[in-house]
Image (cartoon, rainbow, N blue to C red; front, side):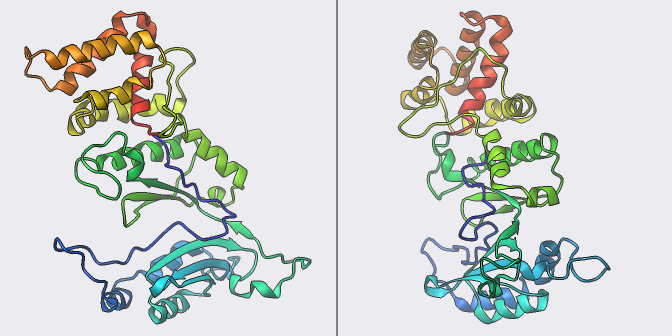
Length: 347
């Protein structure tokens, strides 16, 4: 399980991250036209201007001695207006300025960017030779997990569609990544938000996270990228060998094993057809093991002697083969961890 691709860089040329999705919910089978009046009502009655200001200030709100009163004013906001008009480098000194600007412009989307050395709205006043070069200095550590990245292990939906059967994949991702961020990296201030579309965003807000360099951010992202692959290059996992990645060793015991066996197998019919179980067999580089499994799973298709769910039957056959075959008993549990984790970690 890993954050699916978009770790936000401190030095990205565009803002991304916390996106307030503002289109009204579909209430009929026909797509509704967007009503700007709903948006004005939302900004006028519901939008949490004060809470956003308090959060993005991190105590630098001017209410106590020693705080950096310029901090919030050096934060970049960007607005996407009607007809895809994009406004970057918006900045505000306080919650009231933020509120007035948003109510006036009524943006369809709001993105929150880095904190810069100077007010981004006044960036042109600072030449590159000046002591105050315009550059980003802080940015939350942000992960974007998209449901469509799990299309190789979910069969109830695809693309932007989600349902109650596949959304638990997001829940598991949150549990696993949140635990690793806290236990393995020592982060404490973590916010998870629905992306508004088909996934979730993770904001790590600790001061040490906000001050990470691009290289450090990339290293954290790589920590979660345990298995790699794409639609043209299948993941290959070694069922034995080196110690399991600590990230997976912990998450398998605490979360993944139970979820895989009690939920994912049957809710997604993961091993129900040849087309589906071949995706899993393709992960196993040892052809003798893959071939034996293929034979057992083909036999179970022809057998009508059991009323058990076919997915459960085939997974039990997999476990029995691994336990009794060329893999030693010592490596049996590790092999299951690797296989289960690889299935739950789309490449």
